[in-house]
Length: 335
Image (spheres, rainbow, N blue to C red):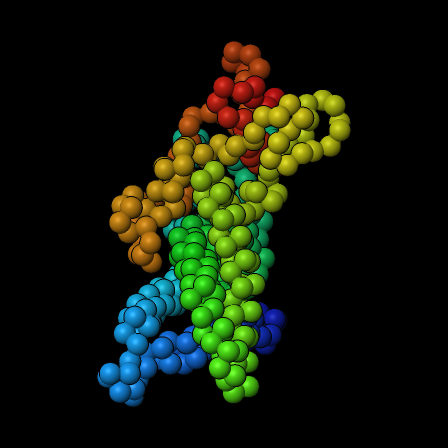
C-alpha cells in the first residue's frame, strides 16, 4: 500500500477512504454467517439421533462446508495481499529514471512522446517506463498501472495485479457457490414455514449473491480478456481508440471500419500473456504467491514497432496516446 504523507492537507479525510474496505469485510462476514448458520449447520444435523440422520444430506453439507471455507480463506488472503502489496513504483536509486540525469540512449522504450523524447512525470520528477502512469490518489507513478481501486484502498499495478485478479475470481466463485447450493435451504424454509428471521436471512443472502455473481463474473471475464490480450484497464479505456485513416470520421472501439481487430503491442500470445501475470508455473497460478520473473520496467513484445518507418533510414517516435495498439500480424498496419 502506498505511503501516506502526514503533511498532506487531505490527511484528515483519508480515514474515510477505509469505509469501502469496512463495507467489503462486513459483506463477506455477513454472507459467511448466513451460509454457515442458516444453510450448512442445519444440514449437518448436529444433535440429531444417529438413526434419524439423513446421511446424504450430511455428506453434502460437509463437502459444501469444506469447499466454501477454502474459497473464503483464499478470498481473504488475496484481498489482504491486494491491499498490503505495493503495486510498484519507479526506482528512486536508479539514475536512468531520474529526470535530472542525462537520458541513457541505450534504454529501449516503446512509449515516447511525438518528439521522440522520453515520457516523464512532472509531479514525481522521474522518467516513466513503459506502461507506467501517475496516480493522483496515491500521488506516485505506478508500474503497469491498471486502475486505482477504492475497495482495496490501493492502486492495482504490476506487483499486486495477480492478487487482484485472483480476488475477483474467488469472490465470483464464492457468490456462485452460495447461490447454487443454498437454493435447497431457501425452498425448505418456505415449505416448512420457518421463522421470519431465518427465512429473511436466507432470501437476503440468496438475492445478494445472485446480483454479486453476475457483477463479479462479468468483471472477472473482462479481466480474463484483458490478460489474454496483455492489456490493462487504462490501456483499454484510454488507448484503445483507433482513428480511421485520413477520413476524419472519428474513432472506433476494438473494431475499425475495415473490420480488422486492434491488438496490444505487448500481446505475445495468450499463454505467455497469462504467464506474465500469474507466473511461469501453472501450479501456482491460483495461489496468492508471487512468482512473476520481471521487474515491471520492461515487457516482452513481438518486435512489431508501434509506428513503422515510411522509408529506409526514416524513423518515427512512438507516441503512447496515438499508437498504443497495432493490428494483428498479417493485417495492414496502422499508419
